[in-house]
Image 1 (cartoon, protein in one colour):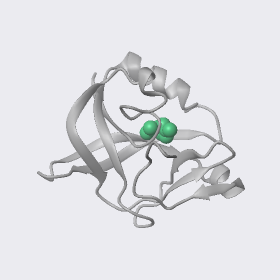
Image 2: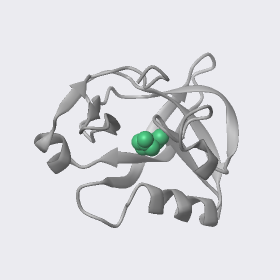
Image 3: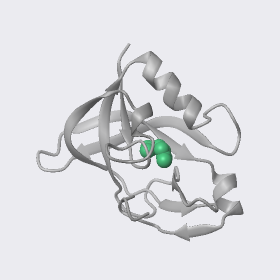
Image 4: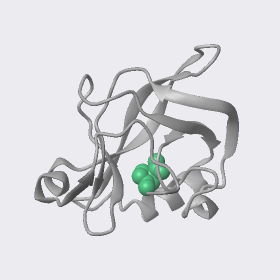
Length: 131
Ligand code: PCA
């Protein structure tokens, strides 16, 4: 069954891992409905969104409709089954402009890895190419 996925980091259109994201983009730019803390973490400054609603800022990203195969490939990239990486959880997002609300999936970074650091930057409202 197709699902919707919010991406805020390297899976965004124009970013490093976009080739793994073979979903169908939903037009526009989306924000997390609630603030969430987005940091750049580790020696590579990976975009790391913590599952701490109400902390940090509303974070900007893109929404894609994805099928099971594409989702599995992205889960593998984000190492969803391994401790210390990302976990895929539901998230409410709003489209900028018409405020269309959707509950979608999103990759949240693990708390343990965040605590270990180093934390390079954040909390941020957006991951962009200069990062
Ligand atoms: N890739 C996923 C999570 C962080 C990252 O770099 C994304 O773009 O949403």
